[in-house]
Image (cartoon, rainbow, N blue to C red; front, side, top):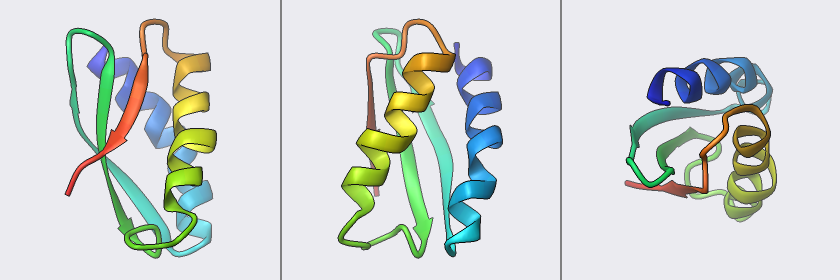
Length: 74
């Protein structure tokens, strides 16, 4: 699953980079929790949780079966 998540993140990365942000994959747990690190403009942005949950998480859940949640780590 980690490889599928990584490929999906690569597809959405340009959208984040267009606004000065970025995301890197940290880990994918066996129970479907995806851990990412928000970078650039996304790090510390007041809208970062909305981007994380309504953008990245929804996309990954649609594209990769088994993804339950996306969480940001530091």
